[in-house]
Image (cartoon, rainbow, N blue to C red; front, side, top):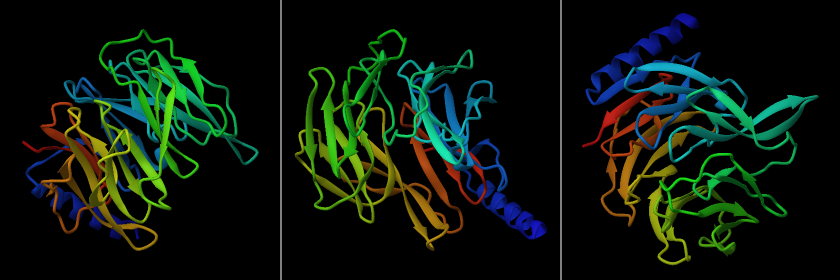
Length: 307
């Protein structure tokens, strides 16, 4: 069986090598999968995780070196860079007597240390987000939402102070500057996931389970169906969206390609268009000239120039 898997791995690797636009940056394997790469806002680093979102690693593009930031469980799920590219905010977990406990942590990427923001608790259904120029951390909750001091100096790199999340089967858009909040049900009876606000704060993109991707202005107007897709990410200029379209057999992914589309739903392009590779989890570079993504049936992370 191991020999059979090795033959498949070598075959997949040779196919990727044939893709001249693909540049290998993190070599993984079927036993040691690297996944979910995310560019830092300054474009100097790429953070990624391993199978089951275990831990966070940092790849430095200039030195082409890699180091582990943490090995904590769930740390690699939906982590968020700070605007100054010096910190990563995430929710980590641990298990005691078969019960899962979660906590919010901030990791300093340079000195490789962490600051625990909350105590470990069993009830933490939502993910933390940066707020108020990264000087605060906002954590939605089923009851009253929570705000914590991050101990980071407020920066002027981002002026967006709007957060969005799903609560009670609706999309909530909250302006932290004046504490105003609106709830929307843009798709009747839809289950909303992967909600993301554009860097300029004007629009959101979201996925409906079993349905399509949509964009919408933050006031609930201009709902646009952009078709089938999964795990969308905005470009740093807020004018384009990158995402994947996957197929599965009910247990495993059987196919996936990466697409780019304008925020208004025009000019959809298949960037990968391969038959045998399963490209997933794309992320724009800050200059939008390249993307990073992982290949499931290879276990590695690649960079691809798109301009």
